[in-house]
Image (cartoon, rainbow, N blue to C red; front, side):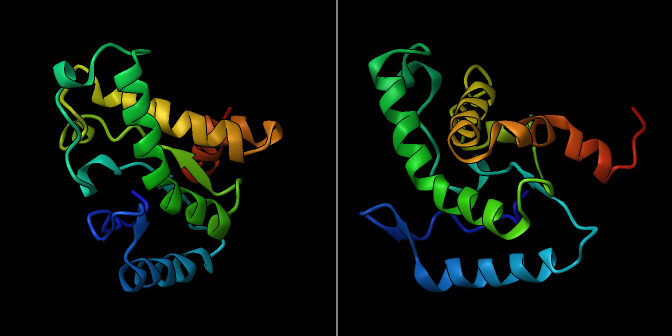
Length: 148
């Protein structure tokens, strides 16, 4: 779960608190030094300020929901990018974090779709098309020693 970063600390300019972020990053670098360690990209919603309820967010695709997801992605991207940078695209994998993503994610009606949308947007922008299949499943198969 990205080592459960403290996503509550930061400033109004959407930047994480330097000391907290640096401590988290140091831990991530230590873990990444073990070549058999993988990192699951999950757990973000339960580590940040709660998102509005499904009713307050509006339907998927609405202007209010799109603005909320863009703002949330801007905030979470600090941790997502660092996770990708430290572990590389072959040692990270998507994790839904369901049902825990409901904690702080806006409720069961929207949280999983919000998390998937946010991470999918990041992956499309930051992970090469050659590494997408790994991120969405093949890396997990390798990490857990599952056969094809």
